[in-house]
Length: 76
Image 1 (cartoon, rainbow, N blue to C red):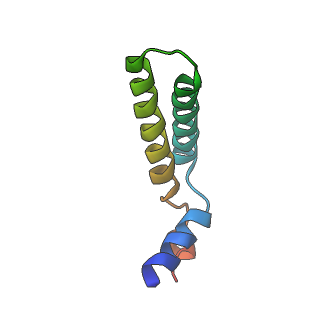
Image 2 (cartoon, one colour):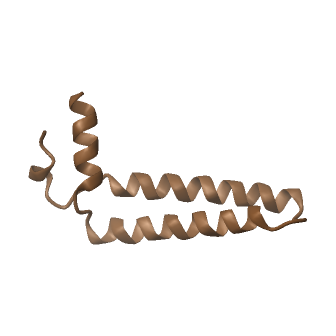
């Protein structure tokens, strides 16, 4: 239970400026990947690349959210 409370505190705490930019970059990658997947009649290889972009962007965004500006605020 301690792990989940610390994770929640990290997700709701402020992130450093660099990691905020990294979060936005991940969201942009996800948007481009989702757009490539959503195009009707797109070749399979492009849809596969879109899936990879979508996954990579989501992972980058979530991982970049975990660092916090002030670690003392995260203590459970």
